Length: 276
Image (cartoon, rainbow, N blue to C red; front, top):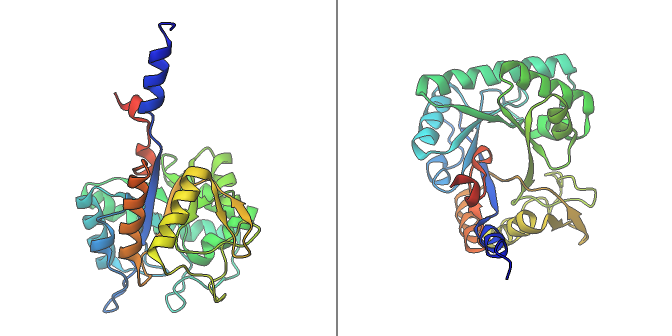
C-alpha cells in the first residue's frame, strides 16, 4: 500500500459534518411571556434575539442576551417590522431606505446590550414578514445587506436557503448562512408555506428531527405536495414562540448528534481535522 493512503483514510474519518441549530428568542414583551427561552437555549447553538419592533423590550433584550452568553450560545440580532400587534408577520409596504433604517436601528439596540454584557454579536437574521419579503425582493434584500455591512461587515447574514437575501449578502461581501426550517412545511418552489395554510406548521418533534437530518445531510426535503425540494442547510431554525419549541430543540439536537453530526454555531463550524 502506498505510504500516503493511510493518511488519506484518517483524514476522511476525522472530518465531521457540522450544522448550526438556531432559535428565535427574546420575544416576550412587558407582562406578556412568549416561549421558554431558558430551556430552549440549553439545546441550540445560535440565538436570534428580537430587537423591540416586532417583539421584545429593553428588559427582555438584556435578560436574553445575558442568558445566551452564559449558555455559550452565539448571539444574533432579529430585526423585524414595526408591528407588535401582528408580531411582525404581516407584510408592510416599505422602501429600501426604510428597510435599511429599521435594520440599522434594531441592530444598534441589541448590540448595545451585547457590548454591555461583554459578549459578541455574531449574526443578523430578519424576522417574519421582513425575512419573507427579502427572500424574493432583490431591492429589499440589498438594503438589508447594506445595513448589516455598514454597521459591522464582520456580521454574518442569515437568509432562507437560495434566497435573494443570501445573494445580496454575498454581493455585499458579507459572510452568509443558508437557513432551513424544521418546524415549517415547504412549497414546491422552495418557499415556506404561508402560516395561513392549514399544513404550514409541523407539530411532531420526531418528524421535525427527521426532516432536519435530511436537509443537513442530503440537502433536500419533501414539499407539502410530496416532491423533493433542494436546500442548503447551513443553519436549522426552530421558532421559539411555538408551543413545542423545547421539545423540538431537544429532539433535533439529539437526532443530529446520533446521526454523527456536530451541532455548532455557524462561525465555529470546522472539521475536526482543522481544529487540531
